[in-house]
Each structure stands twice: as C-alpha cells, then as structure tokens.
Amino acid sequence: MKMIGTRLKLARTASGMSLRDLSAAMNELVTAQAIGKYERDESMPGSAVLLALSAALDVSIDYLLSQDRVALEAVDFRKKPSAGKREEAQVQAKVLHRLEHYLAVEEALGLDSATWDRPDSAPYPINEIVEADAAASQVREAWHLGRDPITNLVELLEARGMKVICEPLADSIDGMTAHVRRADGSTLPVIVVNASHHGERQRFTLAHELAHAVFEPHKRLSEAEVEKAAHRFAGALLMPAEIIWREIGRHRTRVSLGELFALKPVVGASVQALAYRCKDLGIFGQPVMRRLYDEFERQGWRSPPYEEPLPVARESATRLRRLCFRAVEEGAMSESRAAEALGMSVRELDRAMAGPWEDQPSP
Image (tube, rainbow, N blue to C red; front, side, top):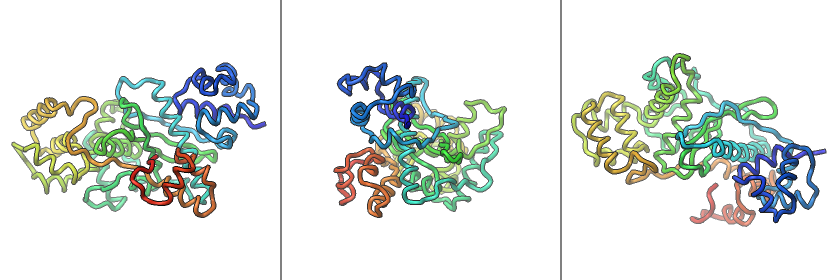
C-alpha cells in the first residue's frame, strides 16, 4: 500500500500550516489528530480526504502518492539570530518541495543532473581568511570568467550544474546552502536565495553560499572566521581586484558617495560591499572607512531592510521555467504537472508559454 506521510508533512510544512490549520482548510473533514496519523503513516486517507488534502495544500494527488525520495544534507543557513527553528523548517520544506519537482522535470527530459561542474582543485583549503581571494580567483579561472563583472550569477551557477532556488523567505533569512541526496545516492549542491531581497543582496548571498560549496576551512578557524572568509570570497568573486584598481585606483584618502554609486551597477554589489572590498584591497584606510560607515549609518542603510538607493535588479532562476516549457512542448510532461512544478495554475502556465507578458507570474 502506498503511504503519504513524508510527502504530506513536507507539503504542509512548506505551506506554513499547522495540523489544525490544515484541518480547518479542509472544513474539518478530518481532525488534526487524524492528519497527524497520516503523516506518521499510521493510517491512509480515503479518496475523499485525499482530494481535500490535495486541494488544501495545492499539490496534486500524484505528488502525495509518489514514492520518490530526496533529502537535504549539510544544511547551512545564512540568517540573523532572530530566525527561529520553525522558519528554518519551513524553508527546508519549501526547498525540498521545489527540488523534487525540479529533478522530476529533468528526469522527464532525460537530462543528466547527477553531477555538477565543481571548479578545478576545489575544495580549496582555507587556513586564513585572506586566502578567500585566491579561491575566488581560482573559481573565475576554472570557469573561464576572466576579470569582467558577472552579469547574471544565477544563470552562471545553474549552467555549472548547481540548483538555485529563489523563494520568498522571512527577512531574517538571507539564504541557505545544502546538498540534495537523490534516491540513487548521488548528491548535488543547492543554493537558496531570498527572492524578496534586492539584487545586490541576492548576488552577495549567492556568492557567499558558493564559497561554502567550494571551501575546505581549517578546523582551527572559528565559525565566525569561516563566515568572514565567505564574505571576502563573495567580494572578490563579484569585484575582482583588477576592476576595482582600474575604476578606483590603488590608494585613496577621499572618495565621494557619487563615485561609489556610479560603480554600483557595474559590479552588481551594494555600495557598502564595494567599500569593504576596497578596504580588503588596502585602497581605503580606516579614516575613509570610518567616514563612509558613519554616513551609511546616518542614511539607515546598515539597518534592516538594508536598502540603498539605485537597487540592482533582482536575480531570477529561470532554468526550471524553461525546462517546464520544453517538457510540455515535447510531450514529456503534462501541463498540470508542469504547472505544479512552477507553482502556478494551468491557465497561468498557458499564458506564460504564449508570450512574454509583463504580468506573468515568476516562480
């Protein structure tokens, strides 16, 4: 007999509903206690209850009955201390939910997603924080990126076989990195970024999380030092020294905010990250940094939601959307399954496939 416990709990957690919430969403067709038994595989719902669960959770019956299994391992959040365990659990459930659909679409198209293009010589040993610069340079060299700014970081990572999930998250959570283990034992790195954040914050989070995927920090480094190394890696990946030296110079005793904001869209990073990169490279000394950060503080840019003027366009993960469109056109997947994978209705899917409408949903 097929049981639905794992899938049911995953879908409920991803929706943010408690057992009682789900019972209420089903007009109390069954009690919260009964739903708990379904999740523990102590009983199996009948067809009417299964339909009601499917409607309340906005997932298909096929999804609830599927026996495919994926799991997240080595989960690491980039978050503020205010983020709670419930928020973390909901993020993990959302990610697993999306990844199961993602992998199913790739499987339907016969695409190999068992490996990713790990940069040569990775993982890179990190004995000191400053070694993060060399690691970023090695990634750029291995992936033939040259020294130009990276236009679309999501597209780069997904082209290299990483799974990137853009989800609206609580503001206390910037992102997450993990490995997804498939039923056949293979693993893939996954990076999650908060879809609600501005582009500069998303890009820094993506680069920061990539650091964790390619680092091998020495055991003597504290957790805080590893985070600082990941920050430095992110700055070096997005803002290679050659670009900064060319645009700002080797040493400055004064700099205007206007000059930094003019460079912000070029490198796709916040002015604050740009200033800190200049500090790492020895371009700005403490007096310059003190003046800049006093101004950042006065403007309120160092406090949540950390919004600066002239925000960079948000990054978006479009590969899953493209694959779903392809799967439908090639007859490899039904419209209903593709719509479910993208978190939209069949009508919305048809509209999205018909043309580049400005108001179409963007999962």
